[in-house]
Every structure is written in C-alpha cells, then in structure tokens.
Length: 150
Picture 1 (cartoon, rainbow, N blue to C red):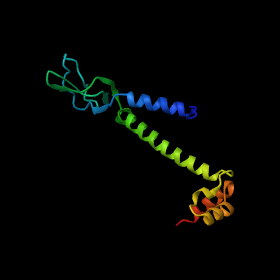
Picture 2: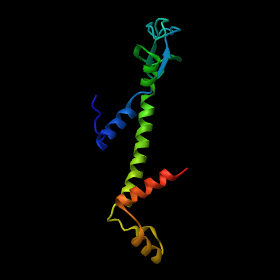
Picture 3: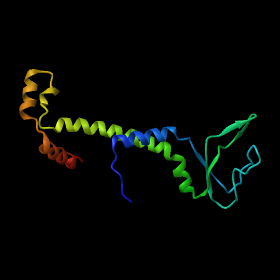
Picture 4: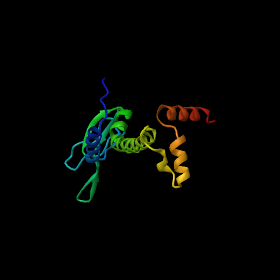
C-alpha cells in the first residue's frame, strides 16, 4: 500500500468528510436486537459478530437504533468503523497544533530570522542578534539538550 502525501487540501477534504459523517455505534449480535418499526431485524444471529449502525431515531415515541450499515464484522472492525470519525477529527486537530509548532520552530531556525525580535530591551536585542544560533547548529544544540535531559 502506498501512503499518500498529506497535503492541506487532503486534510481539508478529510476533515469535511469526517464532520459530515454520521455518528455511528456498534453492538454485539450475541443478543439479537428487537425488530425495527416495519418489522425488519436490526440485529442478527447469536454468533458473536457485531454490527455497526447509524444514529438512533424515534417513530411515534419509540426509540430505535439507526440504520444498520454493517451487518456482520468482528468487534475490532466494528469499533474501528464506529470510532473513526472522532479519532480522525482528533488526529487532524493534533496535526494542526503540531504544524503550528513546527512553523514557529522553522521561523526561529531560519538563518534570515533576526533573533533580536525576541528581546524587548536594546542591549538584549543586540545580544540575541549576535549570539543566537540558527539552522543546523540550533538543531544540534536542541538534540544534544534533549538527549542530556534525564
């Protein structure tokens, strides 16, 4: 399987699809479900498989599980399908936060960034501009400090 490059457009598309996707749930077929409003079975055999269904709904004051989307699958598959939306959105939020952190770091790492911008006092600004390291030297210093950390 080839893993695609994750572009901002792909992230935006995935986020829109995840937000639009129904909230799902899953349950065991070990105890057959009740029948749906028109008499159809919403569950199945007591064979230890699981089914995945959409959001619950009401008809005439009676609550029903949502439409069955996957009739039979393993518990791990059902759990994966039902929890995918929430986990995808959480991963995308974490990715956005990590990307912002990386952009901040790359700004500081850039050899054309004048480190003096971090200081509010003229003498400190001059010191930062003259002695602050950047680029690969900054990477090496950070890596060494992280390795030395107990």
